[in-house]
Amino acid sequence: MSARIQILPPAVAGKVAAGEVIERPAAALKELIENSLDAGARAVEIFIEEGGAGLLRVRDDGGGIAAEDLPRALMRHATSKIKTEADFSEVRTFGFRGEALASLAAVSEIKLSSRMPDAAHGYLFAPGMQTPRPQPMPFGTAAEARAMFADFPGRRRFLRAPATEAAHCANAAIAAALSSPKTAFQYFANGKPRLDLPAAADYAGRLAAVFPKLKGNMLPVRESAGAFSIDGCIFAPRLGATGKSIGQFFYVNGRFVRDRVLRRAVSDSLRGMAHGGDPGYALFLSMPPAMVDANIHPAKLEVRFMEPRAVFEFVRRAAGKAVSAPLGAPLGAPPDAAGLPSAAPHAAADSVAKNEVKILGEEKREGGVFLKYPPANSAAAADTWRKMFDAAAESAAPPVQLFGDAPLGRALGQLHDIYIIAENGAGLVVVDMHAAHERILYEELKTAFDRKPPEMQRLLAPLAAALSPLQAAALAEYGGELPGLSAKPRGEQSAEISEVASLIARRCDPEKLLAEMLDAIAAAAAEDHAVAVRDAALSVMACHAAVRANCRLSLDEMNALLRRMEETERSGACNHGRPCWQQIERGYFDRIFHRGR
Ligand code: ADP
Ligand code: MG
Image: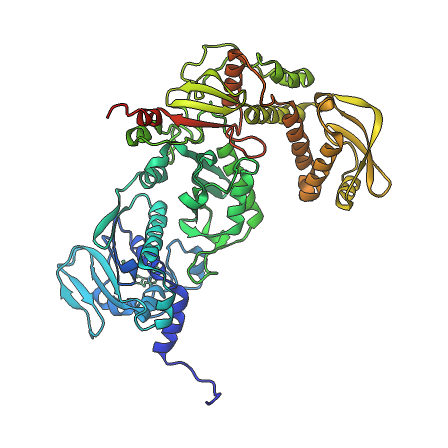
């Protein structure tokens, strides 16, 4: 065999390049839909057969392709979207490389037909034709790819079962539909309608149509700062529906991307709240095109930010705000929001009709009025912390009407001295009282701590604590006072504890508290030390001061706890990420008792 280098003939070169862009039918479908959207389509119809490898057909009512351009559209580097290098940094279309149709033509039999606005008829260009041929058709463009990878036995072998490929195609269609709410989408698989999304006014409308069952569980995200803005929602982490089951849709300037920076920004904002995996979300980030490079990945699934740190901080803050909004307050969007509504319809109706148990996420309040709750001071155990941080006492709300339509309802009693059982409009609410109280105390301690450090109590005799090398280094580095605990390094690998916060003096194990704080310091980035150590200290304090399981509460105390939960940020989950409460809808009971059948 000769070892001489030769230039591949164009047909072979095309096949080599096509392999990169078009990894599987869903990738081709994404390109076809994006072409329709770039052409300004207001409606897109998608047909797939045999997982897309048999047939992919996308029809739109967009601006069309001129007859003489049809053959050219299938050539490599043929695009109408950019002309000069300068255009490159300002692209606002999905496509700009002019290679998708060429790649698709290399791996399948492709037919392209189009009718321009005002033209009397359209034109078809198909394999074997020299020039386009007139044909009757509606305005717009239809692109059809058949027998994908028929000449690529290797690639074809790597395709999964048609049902799996079909699922990937459906995901590609959903991902595209979410980013373009104003365009109507219809999707048919093997002739059966699978998705019918009418044009929506905004992202919220499209999200509600794509995820009808999750309507009540969307935490709106809506924020802008300088050149950045973000819209969309995070699905309440308490739902038990995770990112895996719902999907994690992140868009940058309308382009669906898989980006680690963005993903981390969202999961960071949820630290200590989502037990068992990141939640689902659909987030739409916008920024000037010049601040992001969309041309770094063959399928354009990754981007590079000019200022990744700023993007990270912006997204983390916006997501954090959405997930930590208190239950009793209207969530997110301003009343005039063109995007997501501040009042989501109650999710109860959906699932009662379907007779299924539905675990609701954070309930949202109708309208923009803040509800007021009775003062939260009747639970004896809950009061301990207040004595210590008098600053926090100022925040007690004035007594107003009891319950009304309070989201967490009216306490009925306790179950096994662990759970509070309450009744609300949707059904039954079950609260893990320790987890809930711990979250309340933690959030309140954080607020109080920022105003005033906790009162300390001197130990009878200083306590020696052994440290790991990492912990010792952290103590040396942090130096000074730790919140809720005074400790000095003593020798190489130990410390001497002389004081602890009065709140926990009787209950906590100071050595363990010190170790936890030092671990938190060691794990935190240098600039975050103060926050990490504060949060670790307060989290331990809250855990120790919270009502224990097996503690009897009066109904008043239970109601006070519920009201406090409604006012507390992040009350969906305790500091360790366990859920604090769950909703069991009345429909569940109707079903098990065969009511109304
Ligand atoms: P790109 O989208 O990067 O420009 P493509 O290979 O996907 O490259 O498409 C090549 C060209 O064909 C596009 O630039 C556009 O002019 C035209 N085209 C493709 N699909 C459509 C469509 N559905 N409607 C109108 N024009 C289209
Ligand atoms: Mg394209």
